[in-house]
Each structure stands twice: as structure tokens, then as C-alpha cells.
Length: 191
Length: 191
DNA sequence: ACTTTCGCTCAACGCCTGTTGAGTAAACAA
DNA sequence: TTGTTTACTCAACAGGCGTTGAGCGAAAGT
Image 1: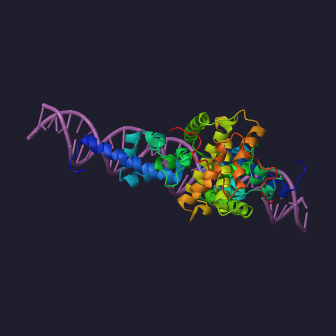
Image 2 (image 1 turned 120 degrees about the vertical axis):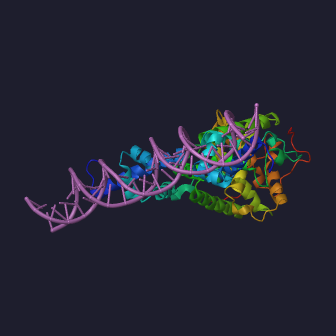
Image 3 (image 1 turned 90 degrees about the horizontal axis):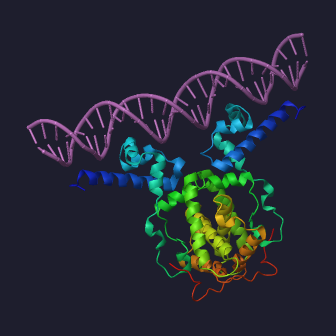
């Protein structure tokens, strides 16, 4: 850091900006973030951010780009293979998910990603309605991710990692059967 | 509409503004919407919006207030009792969900709502991990709602209402069993 | 050493935003 | 018909935003 070439220093500054951008986009969303705030965190003038990334939208695109080894979460456990993350999400992912309901580009990116996951999972399943069961599964994982990492629902507190995995394991059981036994009279639900 | 008292006309205008606000908030989110745009749709001056609702934030709060009979979706079907909506969502709901990841007030409102649903469902379930299974279920419904109505995942296209309900029925089967049979070797999933 | 390159800061522009206060014309009360 | 209330419009302000272009000082090239 003390003895670097000019190019290296510039690249390091770009990384500092990118990291600040990810942090801000992840916790406040695209519209809630100002270039001035990002520059402030990176310890840099706002105009430098433009010189590096061209525009706020381009910076967002760069900040949201997932590392290629994202799908390489090595694990023999079904849920983790499906992409369930019980630990903290990487900031790129948090930034993308945070803005997926309000920024068209993020929405498109998320749709593309999830469509691909549905198709991938479909080819691994058997049965007539494999695609729909894959859809339900992928959607469910999305819901769990949002409920845990963004809405922080109360029921997640105090639940150990193992307890969560155990509860979810039952949930994915129906994946193996093309026709899960639906109870004639559904479980007791009132009003 | 032709012969109304002054108060009635004012109330009607307020409703027109509120409806325009819901429509805009539902499709663009809080930050993406301007008071001028809402006023334009309602055919009214922007300042009148302020006179009626006080501020943009207050207008959003009013626009997002769910009708009290929201939970009264009468149906003997488990999934619909759980809140699954296969038809179009009411614009109040769309507006609230749309902003729940970017607007702290919407996030809090959504968290409160879902926390309540989890607790309600928990009391209707049996078994040790009832609360966690309720959590997984409610989260799953949230994910389905987002995937269908906001991200519009491809797999939803061409799927009939009955097919969807059938696929989801298997998904909720584990609700009745406190311990769902987890396959010793999980279903074939590659990489 | 002298010149060029360039990473970075400074100051500012133009635009759009939420919000405000004064003014107008029509509905009401007398 | 008079005077008052009021639903609504008009014009504007203050602030924050993304973005730009000129300039500075240090490193790189020769």
C-alpha cells in the first residue's frame, strides 16, 4: 500500500469505491443511496466516482455483479445445494435483492437468475409437475432469504442453524415425490 | 356526482388522489413516485395532495393501509387460508410489498404482519418445531407472492390455477407431520 | 532536469423534488 | 343580495441530486 505504481493505486481506489457502493446499496437500496455518501465512505471526491464508473447506474451494475463461484457452495446437503444461506449474505447479493422490487434492471437480473435456477432444478426432478415443484421450491428459498436477512422475522431469533435445517428438511421432502400425500382434511387451521 | 355537497366533493377528490397514489406506489415504489405524478393522474394540483394528506410519507401510509377484511378470504382450502393469492393482488398490498425492502416504515409494517401470521399459524400446528415450520411456510408464501406477482417468473406462465394449487398442496403436506420423512440420500441434485 | 501524464479535488450547473403561502372562484349562510 | 367559508390552483422557494469541466500536484517518461 505504501509503494505502489500509479495504476495499482488507482485500481485500489476503485475497489474502495466499489466496496463502499456495495455496502450502501445493500443496506439502503439504489434510490436511497447518494453518490456523495458512497464517496464519503470511500474517502474520495464524488466526481471521482463518476470518473471511475461513469454513472450511478453503471456503478450499481458493477456493485451487483455476483462472483462467478457463487453457485459453487460445496455441500452434500440438499438445502445448501439449493442455495439456502443461513449465514450472512454477500453484499453483492444483498444489494441486488434489496433493489429487485424497485429498480427495473435489478428486477430483470433477479428474474433471469431465478428462472435459470428453476430450469436447472427441474431437470433434476422426476414427475409430471416437476417444473412447478421446482418453481415452488425456488420461490420458497427466495421467501426464506427475504424473511431472514431483510425482514428479520422474530421466529428466526434463537433458532439454531440445525433447528432451521431440520425444519426445512421436511419442507423439501415433497421434492422427491411427484405426488405428495395431501391430507383429505387439511391440518387444523382456524379462520 | 353532479349534485353533491362541498364535503362530499372533497371526500371524492381525496379518494381519487388515494387511488392514484396506490396505483403509482404499487408499480413504482415509494422513491420512484413523485407527488406531481400522483396529482397528474388524479387530475389535481400537487399542492392539493399536501392539503389532503400532509406529506408524501403520510400519503404512503394512507395508501398502504390494508382493508380490515383482508384476512377474511373465506375458503376451506389450506393454501388460500394461508393467504396465497393466485389472482391479482389488491393495490394496497402491491404497494406495501413493493417498498418493503427499501422503505423502513414499509419494512416494519410487513415484519409486523408476517410475525403475526407466523404466531397464528404456530398455534394451529402440533409438534416440537411447530413455530419453525410455520415460519418456513409463511416465508414460502411470501416468496411465491414475490416470484409470481413481482418478478413474474417464467414457470408461472401457462400454469393453470389448478396445477399451481396441486403443486403447492404437496409443499404444505409437511405441515401436518412434526417430522417429515427426510430421504437418507436426498433427491438427485447435481452441482 | 524538463516535460508529459494522470489520479484526484474543487466549484459549479441544471434539474427535479417535497413543500409552502397567497390568491381565486364557487358553494354556503344570512 | 351580501358576507363568509373553503376546495382548489398558481407560483415559487429551498435543498439535494447526478453530473461536468477546469485545475492542481505528484508520479512517469525521456
